[in-house]
Image 1 (cartoon, helix red, strand yellow):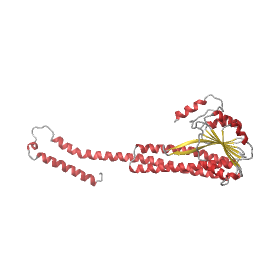
Image 2 (cartoon, helix red, strand yellow):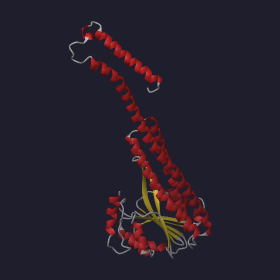
Image 3 (cartoon, helix red, strand yellow):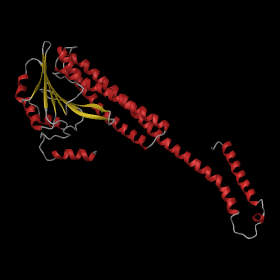
Length: 355
């Protein structure tokens, strides 16, 4: 993992700040741009192929949501950035998908990065995508790595004029999108809890090396979720605390809800992390106990055979004058003595509850 990240970052070594270098995987073939322009009375939904159409939607007293899918084409990202007067460092952060979630307040806009998480049921792992938000007084621009997101319900609410979203501004739209991302976190937690229950069942029945690997994979995902949720909590808190002209007072109460949800998710992750630590201890104890049981059985077997080996060794000596060797009942009596010794030792071990 470390080598992979360093290999991606080495591209920008020695280049001036603000140089657009895409860091991450190419997840779509072509960059696509969708514009949803609306107010309380009307809505327009269109896909744009010509970047010259973008300035038409600037300062039209409507709420404009511009969504860009695909970050690998830095020429298009650069042209969009120039159209909306983005700072070069902002554009550099947009195309670098290895950034942690963060929030920056510029004079003309608010810039924010949030991690959108989905769950791959086939691979049984968490899939991460970086979403960048650029909020101004009447527009919101979002940059995503690929098509397909958790915002479809928001689009449907806008198109059907359900709820208050068409009556509110771009700041409320940004809250709605961030809230949809956080709602997805709860679904991820449900998947994590199912994996937790499955591992617990394996620990009780018969833990194997695969169980240990599953515990480590789960621990890795939980640590990553914690690192994702922690800055999101700080983002919501900073937006509420700072006086940002693009964020109306009526939207603050919704952002406080985002803050509360992030705290709740973080607390759940803390609990899951503690449970994983306990599961790891349980696994180690189970393996140790199983090893002790094996050693116990082997020790009992060895202890039973010690006197038998002694008797066999005595009568296996090649002395010429041994009275028992010429006695017709010598062989069966030796066998009876061995069987009696074995039964006596087994009875003794059971009374001591050693077996």
